[in-house]
Length: 135
Image 1 (tube, rainbow, N blue to C red):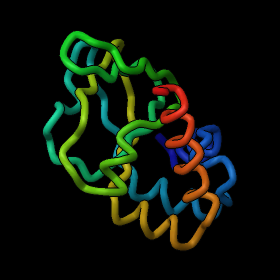
Image 2: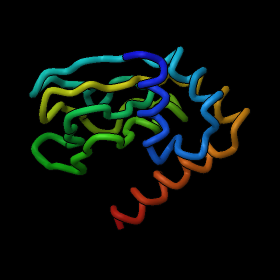
Image 3: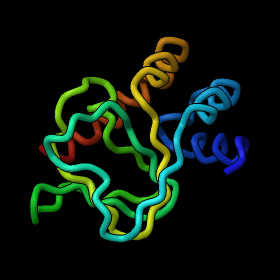
Image 4: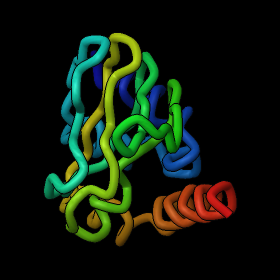
């Protein structure tokens, strides 16, 4: 994808919607685009994680064995806990469809959060929503 396409995609994600475009250009330069085919494992419970993912296209299933926890669609984020606190993954992530994902590693995320409070607020908002849904 072109940088401008990455910026437009990121701007449409609640995590990054309040971040200035100039900062998103920096993010676009360090995110990795990864394709996963339907049924592919993105990560497994217990894997050490240090990055978050943005779904550009496709659907992702977050699950523990056969029990679904979440089904996520385009423009949603997952793996943010591991990006914030590098601990083993608490669940599995599997591509339900062919997917294009952006992967953002911890160090660039921390840098972005330190420079733009809106990113930290977006992360907190997503985490709070997930906690409310699980209750």
